[in-house]
Length: 234
Ligand code: GDP
Image (cartoon, rainbow, N blue to C red; front, side):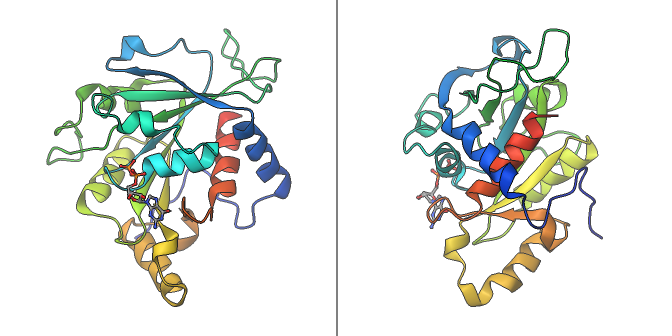
C-alpha cells in the first residue's frame, strides 16, 4: 500500500519555479537563533519549512547546499546546538505573512528554514518523544507557520526503522511532509532505478513521490529549492 501525498510533486519541475526557488535562497539565508522551547520561537509572521532526519543523514550538508553556503548549517552540528531547533531566515524580498494571517505578496522578505535535531523515538506511533526533546513533537504539531516537513532518509542505505516510525507518526498526525532521499551520488547509476523503487517502497510511497538529492554533486537541489518556494507561498 502506498500513501498519497497531500500535494502533487510535479514530475517535470517548471523552470520558472526553479528560478524563483534559486532567487529565494540567493537572497540570503542567515542563522537567526536556536531555541529549546516553543516560547523561544520567533513571532508568527513568516511561514516555515523544516528539515528532519536521523543524525548523519546529510541534513546539514543539504541545508548548506540549498543555501549555497558551506558553513551555514554547521551551527546546528556544533556541540550544544544539536538539541536545539535552529532557525534560518530566507530573504527574497517577496512574501510575508501579514499580521492578519493573509499570505499575500508584500514588500518584506519571508520564509524560515528550520533545522530539527536528529531524532529518536518511543515505541508507538502516537509519540516520538523517545530521546528527542519533547518540544519537537509540540513544534511539529502546534506550530501554525510550519507548512512542510522535509524528512530526509539516507538514499544509500534506505529508510531505517526510525525513519519509518517518523513517517508513521507524521501520517498518524496528518503533518504535511515530503521525503527526500539523500546521497544520490553514493548509488551507482546502474542501481538507481531499482534503488528508487526500494527506497519509495520502504517509505510506503510511489517512486515519483520521493525527491532524490546529492548535496555533494548538486542533484535535486534546485528542485528542493523550488518546493520550498512553493510551500512558503501557501
Ligand atoms: P547530518 O548529521 O544529518 O547533519 O549530516 P551531515 O550533513 O553532517 O553529513 C553526514 C555525513 O554524510 C558527512 O560525512 C557528509 O560529508 C556526508 N554526506 C552528506 N551529504 C552527502 C552527499 O550528498 N553525498 C555524499 N557522498 N556524502 C554526503
